[in-house]
Image 1 (spheres, rainbow, N blue to C red):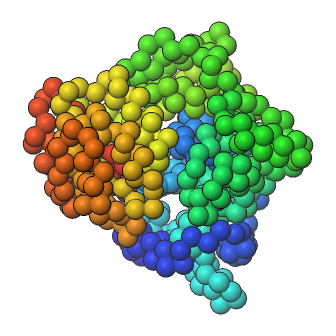
Image 2: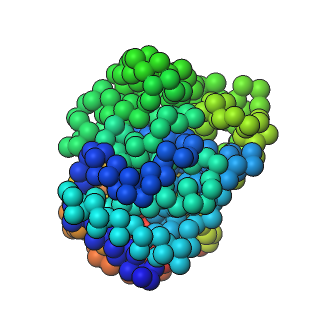
Image 3: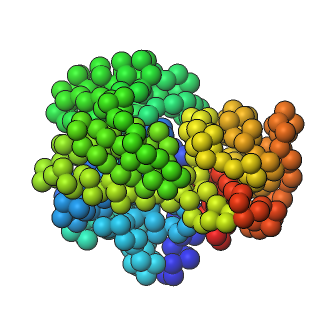
Amino acid sequence: MTYRQAVEYYHSRLRFGMQPGLSRVERLLRELGDPQEKLRFVHVAGTNGKGTTSNMLSRILVEAGFKTGLFTSPYVFSFCERIQVNHQNISEQALAALTERIKTAVEAVEKTGEGPTEFETITAAALLYFYEAHCDVVVLEVGLGGRLDSTNVIPCPLVSVITSIALDHTAVLGDTLAQIAAEKAGILKEGGHCVTTANQSPEAMQVLRATAEERHNTFTAADPQQAEILSKSLAQTVFSYQGATYSIPLCGVHQVENAVTVIEAAKFLPGVTADNICAGLQKAVMHGRMELISHEPDILLDGGHNPECGQALAGVLRRFAPKDLTAVIGMMEDKDTAHYLAQILPFCRCVIFTKPDNPRAASPESLAGSAGAFACKPACIPDPQAAYAKAREITPPEGMVLVCGSFYLLSDIQF
């Protein structure tokens, strides 16, 4: 099996759709020897910020000398990004060899019952890889929800982290913040430790506290109001918190909220020092999350896709965007595109709507319908690479090209 065939195999499992539940992945892991039972974990759920939070925690663990696995989704530039050890992607050759074994196990499971989905298959592959790589700790990012997410097959983790909760995937998780919080809180195991942000909505916070108490978890609500931002730019934010100074190579007030949550979570990781936390945060580079990749013009990438992500991006643009800002936007049609675009379009001189290579992608024309209420000049170029090339062509060196709306869009463009 080649790397390309391996990726195609996982994508072929999309035909099973998104089917919450643990029975399929449990059967698959049993076929593989239950590697998850032989590992230690940090489990991260939430609506916004869980990828950044997972990366920060992994960086801190590496600084503390732990061989650290990291499982995240989606990827931006390479499928291999999803499975990392000490922030080194699994190699294409290793992924191909691993996938051959996973495929054999999946076929055995299918003989006795329903076949695993794409995410379940990838989760099982990652857990097997981390076990065979002899990882000391694995930082595991939830895919969707928590209670019925395939990552929730693990034993009680060192700490469970629940980042900011917002309305997203309402058809699956529920249409109120309380319902969604209940799904996220499903990752809490008996006798564990739960850390979240004090900025949760009251209804979400009530559910998280109640679940933590019911399952005899310690409960920490990290308060970003205790942090003071000392300086900020597109490339770096420096802040103080509880008497210490931290620097993160990320932009936005929301990233300070993530960092404060991580600082509190790291206190539950044995063998991690204050110096490890400081050094790990300083190295927490995140692909595709308000990532500045070039200058003249500035090229800013952000794969966030819901209104809360739009609000965070708007806060950055309000402070740093030049007058000549050209946006390349592609989104999934099942997202709240109107509210997201209402946050971003006021900052744009021009906007080029495009279509990521995904069956759920919205048409450029449907997105362009939201531009009429704003002063920006809209255009539709369905091919993402061509849309990006056009944006570069029409943006002066002192301007900015913003590529945003979906991680799938970012993965379709060669930057």
